[in-house]
Image (cartoon, rainbow, N blue to C red; front, top):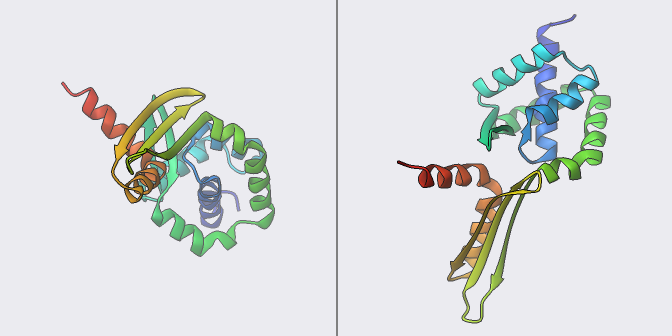
Length: 175
C-alpha cells in the first residue's frame, strides 16, 4: 500500500493538521523535524507534498528574512475540516503532544505582538512588533484616534504580519 492515493492524501492532511494546530506560520525545518523523526514520510515525499499543497492553495508561503514560512489557507482549513477524521488518532495525539512540548520554542523563533495604550487626550498608541529568534525585525508605534482603530490594527497585525511586513519592506527599499 506504500504510495497509494489514500496514503498520499493522509500524509498531506497530517501536514495541514500540524500547521493548523500550532496556529502560526511554521518553517519547513520545524515541520519536517517532527514528521521525518516519526517516519510518517520520507524527505522527498515530504517536499513533494509541500509543493502540491502550495500549488493547490491549501498552504501559502511567506519569506521573511530568507526564511520561508508555511501557513494554512481558508481552503486548507476547509479541507482539513472535511477530512481530518482520516488521520489516525494516534498521529493526531503525537502531533498535539509535540506541539505542546515545543510550542514555546517554536513561538520563540517567530514572535508577533500587538498592544495598545491609552494617551491622556483620548487617543491611543499601538505598538506592533515582529521578532525572529529573539532578533527584532520590526517595531512600529502608531498614534490613532480611537480604541476601535487600535483594536483593529492589533487584530490585523496579528493576522497579516507577513503581508504587512513585506509591504513595508517593499516600500522602504524601492528605487
